[in-house]
Amino acid sequence: MTDADLFGVQNLPYGSAIWPDGRRHAVVRVGSSALSLTAATAALAAELAPLFAEGSLDPLLAAGRPTWTDVREVVAAWLADGTAQQYVAALPDLRPVLAFTVADYVDFYASEQHATNVGRLFRPAEPPLKPNWKHLPVGYHGRAGTVVVSGTAVRRPCGQTRAADGAVVFGPSRQLDIEAEVGFVVGTGSRLGQPVPLADFAEHVFGVCLVNDWSARDIQAWEYVPLGPFLGKSFATSVSAWITPLDALIAARVAPPPRDLPLLPYLDDAAHPWGLDIAIEVWLNGQLISRPPFPGMYWTPAQMLAHLTVNGARLRPGDLFASGTVSGVGAAERGSLLELTWGGAEPLTLDDGTSRTFLQDGDEVVLSASAPAPGGGRIGLGEVRGRVSAA
Image (cartoon, rainbow, N blue to C red):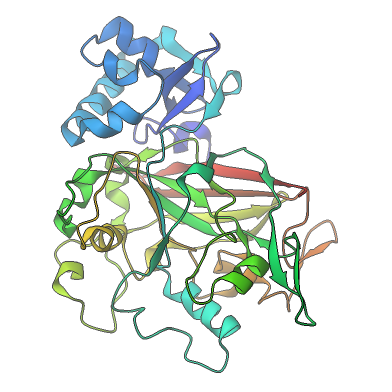
């Protein structure tokens, strides 16, 4: 499908970019072009101009759902009648930047298939899922300061690892990996001590983006007992330049898979199912290597948000939480090289004749995705692109 099909008026994802005038503008994508909301609102809608004057999406996120709806309707009207055509530029003339200030970053572990695969690889003598896994969405806090926009080079991290002979050594990671994930951008905040129920998910979440949570598996393996991910994850997390508004994904909303165990009331989503039919593709050096399916995720984003706040933790505009690696049942549906190569035991053979267990310097990974569109057809989620540079 073309950009015009995937990024038409049914989609209208938001972003931020350096405009041809050298300034940062808040923008909305239409096909292979972008409309400057900074320039258009200043000229055509003074009441909305303060939301976009600085070129970031931060004020829009904080404004709340009624304003999100109003802005989407105004933009759609401008595009329909050509009113704002003079404020449109081609994407190649723009330099995307991170669209919002990341306040907090939380990563979950919501795919049963991924968690099962990792359990079998790391704990072959034990049940693959820990006893808590089907009772709550497992997650950890990441580093907001190392979230980067698509296209940013990812430097191979250094850290402590344990060698085959048992020696503890320091140096570049030899097992650099990807994690294909879906991220959720919080708009409206919440009060400290006030949990956010499942029913309020759409009042707080502004939109959706793709996420590549780069992972240094050898660093992670040495450090993660007993507290979990730290330096093996915190060096870089890539997100799309484009945030697809939740309103554009209404037709993608589906029921999650059946659950094996009863859920506690705050996680019981029978009345508020927020599974999403998002089809992801993972490309390595121009070759399609996996198609992870998001509809099969055991835990939904609404449950993740409810669990994240059930202890009274406060939401802030710009909070980002991600699904964790998306993996399906099939071998070609795994969202990480760890799984695709089964811990390195089954290398991938690429079209150029080379093989990979984990990433080499110079490798480029691209995540892309699409979902059913309102009224039929499909919409695209902004890609996430990153190339590995040497330590």
